[in-house]
Amino acid sequence: MTLGRHRVSLLVFLALALASCQSEDKPPQPRFVSDYRGYAGATAGETRQREGGYFIEFRSRYALSYGHTYVVFGRADKAGRMINPEVAGLAPSTLDPGPYVIGHFVPVPAETGISDGDLEEEYRSASWRVMLTEAEYRKTVAFIRQLKAKSKFWQASVYNCNAFVADIAKSMGYKTPPIWLRPQQFVTQLREMNGG
Image (cartoon, rainbow, N blue to C red; front, top):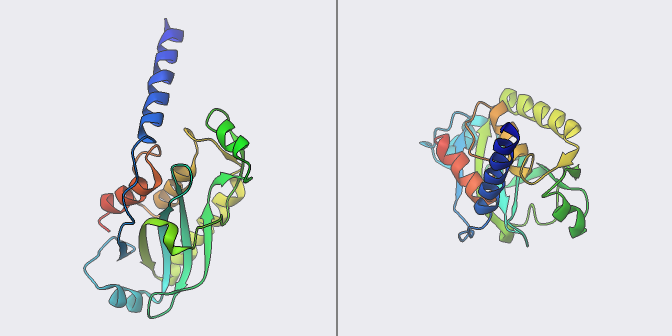
């Protein structure tokens, strides 16, 4: 009897995961900027000046599939332009579509760095930049480096790019949406859930 329940649970889980990927992305969403605690009351310039220019940006981009979620982090100048940004995200470690397809069923080797299109504005579908103090930034970057070192596999329904970014957000004390959303929806809901 329990084996039958597990099969039914697995089928429901897979159906929900597949259904979440069937929606369509919206046009690019506006850029949002807030401070670490999610207060968006200050203008972007006031927040940048107060926080010293350190940031992490939760970001999604369009892709041939359902998109990609990742973070960009570093310093910003007074105009908000990134200075030597770093990127962290989780994706299959090849451009070959075969492992990507297989990764919907079993874990496949992953990479955690920049991928094609991550810093190109025309592919950005949603973003939420959080301004940080130097201490907050150093703590967040230390966590990102540890996460990158231990994240060796990608699997679409268990540990995907949303799950990787969710781990970063949780380390900062943020609530996170379900990992089975499309990347644009994931980043938008992440921001909305945390007052950004």
